[in-house]
Image (cartoon, rainbow, N blue to C red; front, side):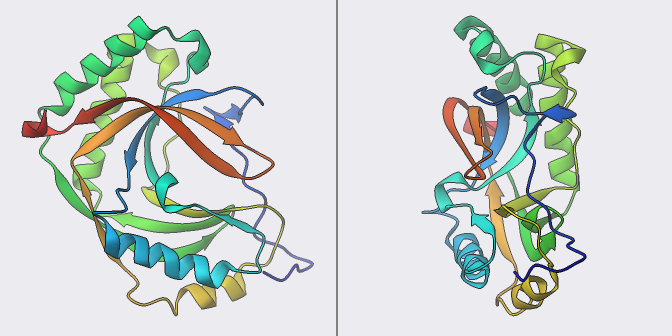
Length: 217
């Protein structure tokens, strides 16, 4: 991605709610995880995006770390949330998730974004219900301070920008990736303990609890 005098891609900034993510701190999140062995059309789409990103200052997200962010627990760092508290949160989320049926979304097209490369995710209906269900579950257990994460339109991050750059060329290349869309089945979410590495521009995690939707409980 060639640097220009008017860059419109800037290094991604990891955040806790509306503030910078404190270095050395992990945070609990609820994610939808891509399952590479099942979601093969999606991983092929991602591979196509990664191929056109070679040589650009973007850290590609490996298959095993692909995710949709559903919510972030914002009241305290993960290290300050006990196992009993984690168990209580997971139990509440399971009760609420049991009322939602699994569903499928479409991922794509891929977009050169202000902080990297993302893929749009649609439609909004079932995802919106999942966001609301998780959000209210967290609020019920941990209060308003725990649900200050600012949501954006649903998306799957393909790569995080490491440096300022002009995104026009990478967007042109992304448009050549075919097929430009793939499906993702959402039948569970995961409560995860997330590490953000601002230098490497990576997100990794340890699973705290899987939370199945509907009859998968």
